[in-house]
Length: 228
Image (tube, rainbow, N blue to C red; front, side):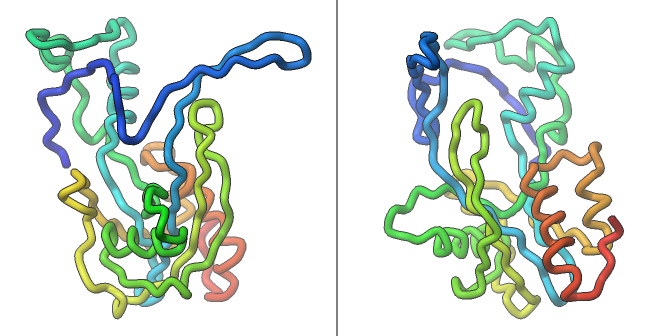
């Protein structure tokens, strides 16, 4: 995960995950347009291990985050479109460490299997990414919301799942054949809210929101302070 090299930025002519469009419309008589990306909806899961009273998160390298950090550290760096024979970005400026692109996230996945329900997709992601076998009946829907409303407008549905060490049937880590390289991370309940608000730790809004939801809805059940 920490060994990132041979970085190039090239134009994207086609993608299995993102398709750019421009919509023209009139609003209150004024002609406007907006650029957007069509992409898949997704599911995410807040996993709580009742054996060790900890949350199960995933940690992985995100190229988009990495490139944002690189551009931030090189504000004068021109936009590069690499073609055959061009130098890589690494040869043009000093790249940040790979850790700049690593984020903590909820277990999650794309809704790209029309024959499966959202719960079934969530179950698969929990097993593939985190190694826990959770019955669909044990998944509790928290809510759904729009993510990336300015660019994609996709919907993410968030679930909650309680697991124990007995449910752990593998190491997780994602699907290597899909290029996934995921590290499973345990966040103790007592440290969760400090973790959520620590700006030095790169994380998704889903982690913050789900920890807050747990504090409001589930912590009283366990009669445990979450150190808010």
